[in-house]
Image 1 (cartoon, helix red, strand yellow):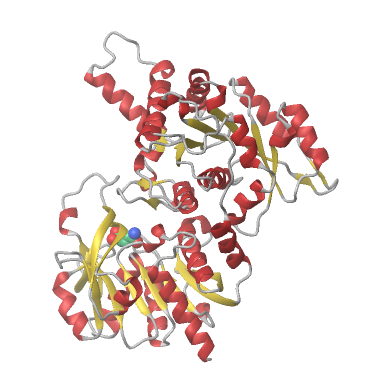
Image 2 (image 1 turned 90 degrees about the vertical axis):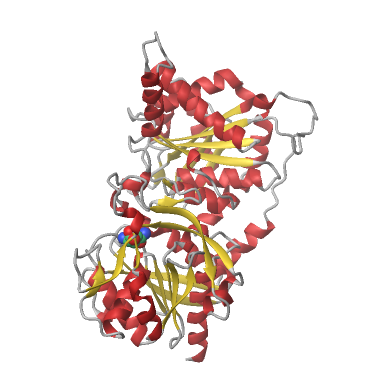
Length: 547
Ligand code: GLN
């Protein structure tokens, strides 16, 4: 296979041709290392290269599925049903790709494989150690993803901060990869913080110097530094970093606070990052094609209309819990010329006034009884006051409970997730979930087809008879109640192909009342918004123009 845009036209052996970009983080976490990595991946992809991404999480969990969004932000779900770190969501959104669980390595997945192999007897005779057995497994898993994707470039983001005990084996493994594959095939990017101490007002480079020192102690010299700061760094500050960290001046990039994450690739590109990487990795002349991306960013930054959507949730104090909703709303808004601001509404203390004046209401993902009654109240308000409503997964199940209680008059309608024996179990455990003992990775997960009935609002929005959306649930609409719910006006217009599972509900006597058992937010991308979100935004805009 010819190497795209490779100027020299030289034939290079397969493994040598693959380029690896390793992104580490210094100083502190939450700097936007994931966005910087995704931005670099996007820029290279926009040059016509095959680019893929890997996220390494040094925690012991085998996946993010069992972790609370309080601690770790949203759990992102992939087509193959893997429950992964939310950074994979950014990679999918920036690359417009669908990744698999293999793209998220954790200490847990690596150790599990090594221990399984040890038990099988694969290492017979050897003392199994971090170096070389764990590091070999890490390298093998990274290379396997590169091969499986026939990638020209693999961007590997190492979670955590350099210096953490947990990330040591991963840093050691990528250090070895540079030795094995050669410097022209591996590039180290270090993301750091350049704080401004307000008294002096001067950007401080010392934390960056220290974290580079830490990295060097492990044997890694960064090639490129992405320096996060409130404002654009002056040349003087960049020179200082270049000198003390021994990095080309042209490779000290300033990453000031952006107005939207989607602007970051453009900010990095304006400093010539693609050219610099192309030279360093001998990729030949590259020219990123960013027209579509630029116009999307323009739409996000300069909308002609404004909407406010309430998200009634439980983790609202930690916005990271609902990142994909924010992104899906911004993609749908941009497509329809609307800027969307979010009003975070705490479900547990919900009162009607909390959603006064909003254009639309979303009840998102959720687990357990806490906050469910507040959310049901919010749905009732939206339904009765004819405020556009989109319910997702938990928000779908609660919409069914609300409807059963207040329209059908089924007192005590509830989910068996909240009460073991409600008078009317309108939401009940999936039959195949009854014998599940192990909680990790055992929900109904990933992409499943949904048949959409023609002549419905769902069909109008999707324009397809069969759609594919991602799932993550243990409970579902109890089939015994479907007929009664439908006769009272709540129509199940999307179902599993065997007709047994309810997937989309819509209520006709309303400007927009739709809910889905699946999670459309996971498939929304810039310039490819998801129909249920554009439906919601479209309905809100229509009502606004009629006011
Ligand atoms: N708790 C519900 C279930 O397990 C909803 C899950 C969700 O919102 N992802 O079915």
